[in-house]
Length: 71
Image (cartoon, rainbow, N blue to C red):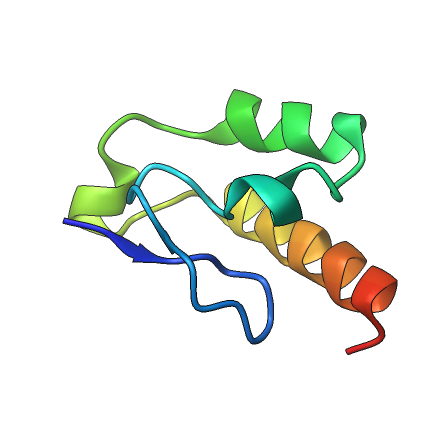
């Protein structure tokens, strides 16, 4: 099971536990990356029930990358 990187327009397949491909993940500031891992709950990619806090940080990470890429 895999899915696409959540960065806008990225077509790289990543493991379901990962939010982004390596290139995009390292564009996200360390503080946001750390928050995402702290808020990650094992199995949320299976039951599709991440916390609201996780989703908020996920959206922040996606927005940061989009801004850096001019999207």
